[in-house]
Image (cartoon, rainbow, N blue to C red; front, side, top):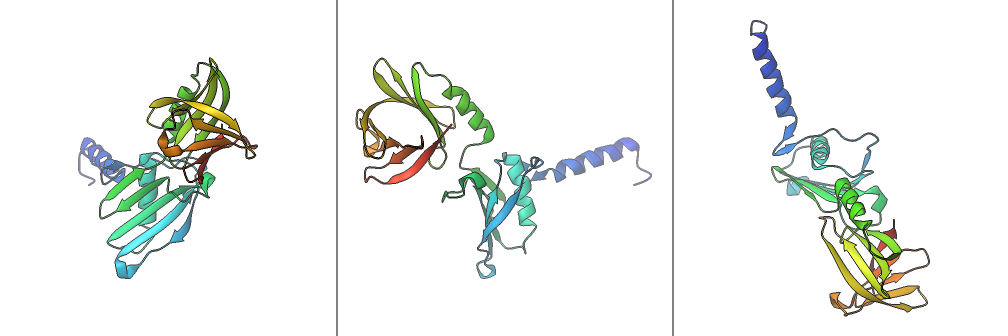
Length: 220
């Protein structure tokens, strides 16, 4: 290459860098400062021609950062026809659900199931806007990935839900005192009998119509 014009060498270099920054349809991004991960489960099976990892991460990542990590993990194992990776957040170590997935089957596909850091910021901004006296604010990070705000206005108790996509809803609640804490039911009895209990730790427990606590939203 030493006889090639300088401009052509620069163009070749730029093209090469561009190719290295891509994996499939995704553009890789550097992992954030202080990022760590730990493989907590490996169910790879050569007979089934698959690698399958469960990875605990200490920070939420962008799609481009997941692509970078996925490639690193992909290159760390003997190649199989398929490669499945579930990412779980360290702060939600008791959650049975993955925050995100990346699958090579055979091309890379990334799916962020939970909320991203930017979506969290947007949710928090929208959660500040209430027209009444606040009772509490919580973050539900297993099923709906939403902020829940309960407040009082004109002798009514209102639940405001801010979803990760920016949509909001408001429902009127009714309040009763129980041995477990303050119980809130939808006044119109909606959502298949689901209800909330504000416990003595200021956590908002969510129950289904079988009285099962299926998730707990933590105070913000």
